[in-house]
Image (cartoon, rainbow, N blue to C red; front, side):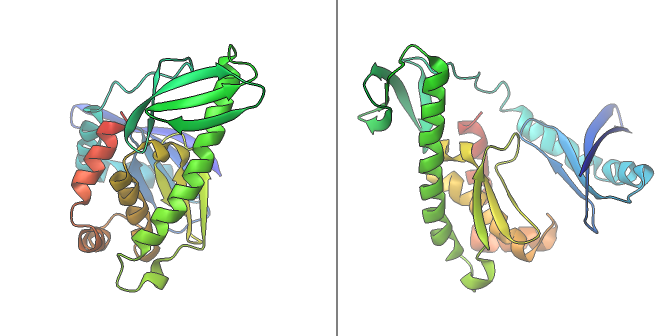
Length: 238
């Protein structure tokens, strides 16, 4: 897999994009939450053809960038100190770091309580909280996956072959060509209805790999209120 940078002029705007080349037969354009344009392209696609496709989709790209721009600036990086707030399933919880002979993270009455042998080490607190988030994400995403598969007329057709939770830099989720569902660990901080939107969106890609009319028709059918869920996701996680 290789990465390249490119740009095209669309009206008064310069659209810059990243090209990620993979072993695939089609070209797909995505606008990430930070307004970055990413083009997944076949390894043998000509740069001129890629640029022409981006220019052709220029109106859509600009709409997506304007949509995400309304949620910027985003939440600053966490410092992992007592008193700061952290999201879990759409709710704000205060971090409380206390000294203890063992390491443990628990949710207690509005607090994420971190028991640590090194309470004055934010890096240790961060690692403990991240491990707690990953464990919670793995369990909650598996639970919501089972619920959302049931939205489809033939659930077994839309059941992924695996569920992978990892830290993604931009995307909330993806569906691999081999039908493995990848979800961003950060999604555990979002409301449940927003988690359901991301899972359902990706499950639709099992039948429709691209964001064309058939994909949107399927998403509308199984989750008619998806636009509201998507907007809540971006606003809550900004």
